[in-house]
Image (cartoon, rainbow, N blue to C red; front, side):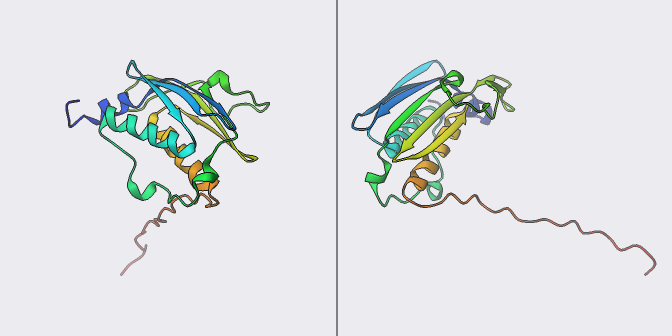
Amino acid sequence: MKLPLTAKEIARRRLVERFECSGGKGQRGKGQIMLVAKSFKIDFDDALDLAQAVEAISWRLTGKVLNANLRPVIKSREALKFTRIVGGDFSAYDGAAKPPISNYTICDVTGHVVRTSYLRVEIEGNVWENWFGRLDELLKCLYIIVREAQGDPYVPAVGEVVRPIVAQAGHA
């Protein structure tokens, strides 16, 4: 990989072309992810293993990983063992409700079509359903699952409130 990559090239390399994974209680999870016409086989024991495999793929393709302060502290590896995990393309969603997004979008940076992928993780009665099109989105979803499965609630960063300053009217 020739570094540094342009923002457009990094965005292109993060587009998920194909994603599949499955596993159940007492079994290892298995899967495959394809990006920039390269296929990566994934074997994992729990949600953290899957997140770390995705991050390793990101590092290999883009030279980028998630900011360290966004990774959750691991307190209980046992709490991260999935009861069931299913991932695939848009058609993998088997819920009765209408999916929250369409089966594809257009990338603002590259102009490429981004296929929507789906991931459902079940851990001891808790269910997370995630929709993503890019590798970094999948990674963020997985780390949120890791955080919440250990009992830490997800708290999004609070943005600053910006109030416009309006010049006073009238004569001084």
